Image (cartoon, rainbow, N blue to C red; front, side):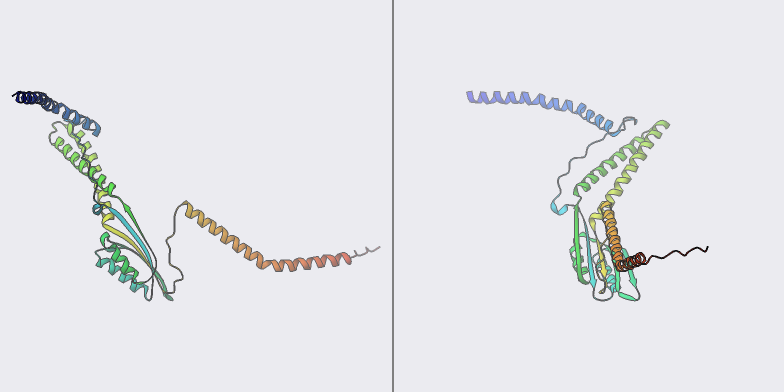
Length: 296
């Protein structure tokens, strides 16, 4: 019986301590929530709006799985065709279309007198999941000279943009609700200005999300097709300060080489002319020319 009394006393003590704590939590929930709303409103820059708005931070998103990561993929390859470059270019376009992609750009340079030196460059957009197969088919159009692939993980950027987009949409809806409850001209003008600003921010976020979704859904493939008589594959020209410095140094060395070549070609003639001049000077010194005697 003593054990039963002890258990009952402990239960009563725990109940007495827990009840007030829950009541305190419930009673403090309202003010705490209100304080959170006020802080969110002040942080959102809408303290001047009639009625105020509530800005709630979106919950942290869980890290996406490896299969759900957003990756921007690009690839480039150079292929020497065995025959008609234009025909190979059409086949490359067909490969992209069969994979569910399209031709985003094309640049072809050819000489009617030398069709075997034609160069065609195509920019293809193909689904990321079919990039490997597309590259294999493009490489089979001739002899693969060069191939490169790059991948950039933008998962964090996608998650951040989607969270900001959801928050901005909710913010616009709250301001629209405030506009519906406005009762004076001043309130309407003030709320409409804030609504226009938030809608512009929303459109900007939507454009960024759309562009990033396009980049992660479709890979960009640049394929350069060259004719069988092309001496070297066409390489993209680098840009930037270092590229300009390299181009200037190349021009300087090329100019110096040309100048040395010209000097080397003229030098034998200069030596011969110098030798002839020395002989003429020696002869003149040995047989000086006498001045004519003036008449008396």
